Length: 627
Ligand code: GLC
Image (cartoon, rainbow, N blue to C red; front, side, top):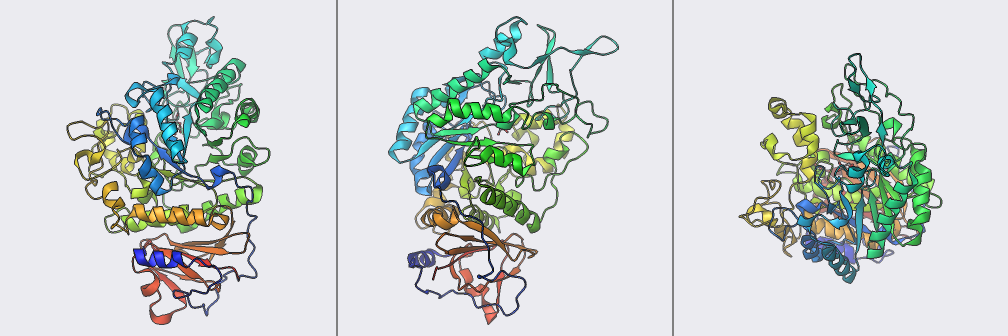
């Protein structure tokens, strides 16, 4: 990246009309299909500027953020303690993954009480204090809303399973068994579990001799949204939290709440396996819009809040747009999976698809990102921007090269991309430090996620073999404790305490204390911090502006321009390869603003060439001042 003085120098020269071109590129002699400024058409830019569009949202995985009560798990007070760190980074909104009371089978995504905090995380009073402290800093709290399913330990489910005549029986999805030739009960259809693809999603319950439906794991029973009492109970939860002062929700797998009520068998795509993926029968089901519309009318419209819906298993642009259309949609934005699945392939054995590591190149990245920019800008929707969360590997490991040589370059390259696209920006804890996946040397016992156990049940040998795949794809990669400093356990918890999950071995080098020191001007953290400021100061272009690709056929470089209503252009040039690459600059009188190599463009322009030479994982951001 640029050294501190250079950044300060270029950012300081903010007068858009002054031609401060000490780093201006020479024009290209050989045109290779670049858009000339006059020919360029940009997307409609958004003019309605709700607060959540410019907000930087920071996701916290509570178990792994900061342990203040010395039990090896993070807690709510641990979040409050770090608010100044987040404020300094430029965070506006904290999204907490579930902190509700839970048996923790799926780390809190299995909720047993929506109005109580999981005791190791703290109390409702701690949350009130967190909201207050956030407010003092001009920040907000967004909660995770997990209402497609509850824990099988939720009192609603305990009642529901107790007898067929219980008033809550119909709050969950119960079906009679089929019977095989020997008269043994069999699941009502062939749908498999999402987090345990080899198993049926129907769980036989001895007490009432019927099956209940649990899409993810047997301990996460799906609520029956067809029942109006269930919906009313969910709206009551929403009000409970909004009235306490939270500013919105990230809605967990919200597009799965309406299921095809005929529960048909799924098409066989994994031959020889009894249970098949069936999400096409319950992703964006027939009553989804009706349910979300009701939720909006009953609750959401009455508060100034933001919503982001996690929406896996759908691939239809029009469907997405209906959900997030800024005028008559239901949610502010959604998380789609196309980018994070860039290297996923469907295998023919359960588990293969999730853990597959396929090939991809810059043309895939360009196609996916520009497609989503266009869908939302042209269609009147709004994007969410994320490369990491608690279900994904670390982004520098996923999309770049996390070796000691290139980790920082790759992390900064991704930061340049994420902070210059249209949408609301989501940063996941540790992403701002360039944290990486767990070391390859770690054995399977270090992986704590139920998905891994479900995938290879009791099979140590298979688990060992799968180590490489796990190291690339397991959800555990993003869940190792935050690395605060170089003390034992990375400062996440005291030395004498065993953290719930092992701290990544690289914490002596990769940690917040080292990166936030004022003299660490070129740290990944400080780079993120400057880019977040740049994004906010230039929100007209970088958040709300139009988007257009440049040099669309470049085999190595992803580049685009963002355009403000004023006509000011920002150009972003990203070499997504581990080798040198060239990129031809449009003739726009560009003024270079930032890059992830300390010596910036000086060396890049060697020889007075017309082409920009980019080093491995090098990224540059430039501006064309308006005339
Ligand atoms: C979402 C969560 C994931 C969880 C699943 C079931 O995808 O992000 O962590 O396992 O829903 O709740």
